Image 1 (tube, rainbow, N blue to C red):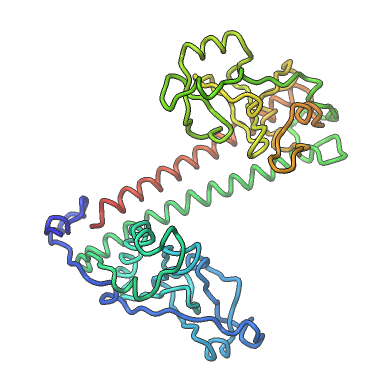
Image 2 (cartoon, rainbow, N blue to C red):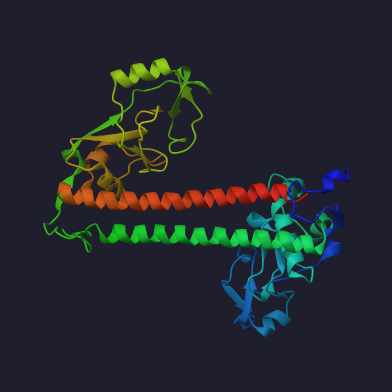
Length: 396
């Protein structure tokens, strides 16, 4: 490796020295723990949190140990602020700074460089290297890592002052990501709660919460009373290509990125000749993950027949209201191996609905709430992408 390769692409002002290559085991005290006998009840239920590999980033644990459990096993204590590295199973390669003082088992490697800044630097470097480490030492994602492997890893190391700057920067970025994650989670929980309270419970005709001015009971109806099921014209495989003019969404790419396209000429012909959704139409997945909803925004796109459908209704239903209404329906599904939503299932679905004015109010409320949730989701994704990019550019 050349001297130039030991300098990151982005650095804080005032740091110019090249980073030094060291073995991770030279920089930190490392050890793993063990598990007390599961058959001895005297070892469990005490005051010592027992941290397992899936809990390295948690502030509480499912199990706890007694002093006897700790003393009569290979379990080892770790302090808050130490680096915890998961070595076994599905969590192999995950890393975190311990949020609690507790005991660890044999699936975790603890590391302590005796300085919080150095610990943070090691943790962020290991996080950046996760893919490389697991691809190098785990065959096809199978098997376990070991303390011996991790201690021998070569880590480019800057001065402690630069480590402090880098660790503090990413710690603040993580705090910001956590803040937005919490806001997003609270909004999702709030929406779920309002869906329960703004729609009548089974057997009732009025919801718990209503907008002012609405007192009439809601009516029990079937979706088939409002319209019929519509779908696009069938597209055959030979009519598609990996690149093209118009995205063709199959059930596997519904709501995601397309992997097939059709020509603009075919699109315009089929759009003109056969059923096609209008902007605002709610498309429903009739196979795969049943009942997923995507609102058609008017973009050029074509959708797989029978697997992606919509209710062509007479507008006694408000589309904005229909979206939360769909989420309340428990679809009657048929099929043993591959479940699917048949047209008759959609049309026979029983719903309780208010008049058009109340539908509009409820629809607008949930549309605004969905927009707010989407906004926080995008902010969260942006911050996560920024972090990923900076991990690549601020480390060697």
